[in-house]
Image 1 (tube, rainbow, N blue to C red):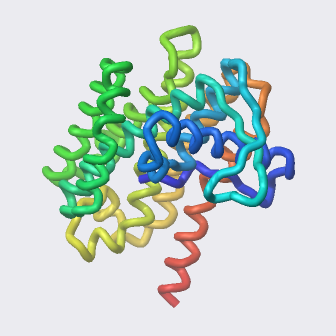
Image 2: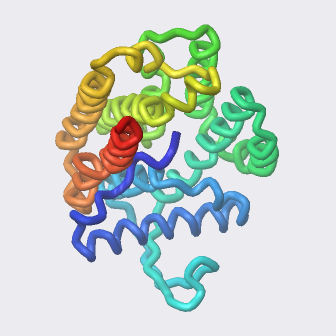
Length: 277
């Protein structure tokens, strides 16, 4: 359920992409330095978006460096690090831990269970620092698992759980921006939940695993209705963003929310249509 909140690279200026990539490298750096090389595997674009969003809102002191790494050993690259990147790294650990648990419960993937054990110490550290937030995230993810086992297909009800997860993650501080950040995260989470279901519908039907779109998929209106649902979710998220006083990297964030989030959707839709010819 990761990898949907990305940039629309063809529409980005070179400078904007360099900024985007520098936050991604900063997130990778934090994961390695705080939790070891094993934690770098959990690196994902969705939480990189959170680090950029929160950095734009709170404008914390940011350290900018030129660094080399294993992936880029021959050439230095720009890296940005601040308290928001640090927070995004911690939430990356939390989501990855529960994603491993979910994959183990659903498909008994031994590799996921093994990785969960590898990052357990890091997860416990984050849980100790954010006990209330992690407890709420855990409760919501358990509700998702319960609903899926009961084969519930109420789209709004089941997607609300992951919406609350992302709402908790976006709402970095209990301050004046809490409500708008939570609202943004809530609908972004619902969007992620639905687009993941949209992409996986055929494979889930073959494996007999839960998918909230399984009934809708049997209708002629599947493509149109899916698009309408996704548009409604992301429109709520973008409206919340526009109410925030973000100037720094605002065009980069808009690129992601208005264009980048649709990149995977268009790819999946095109592949599905070609397969039906």
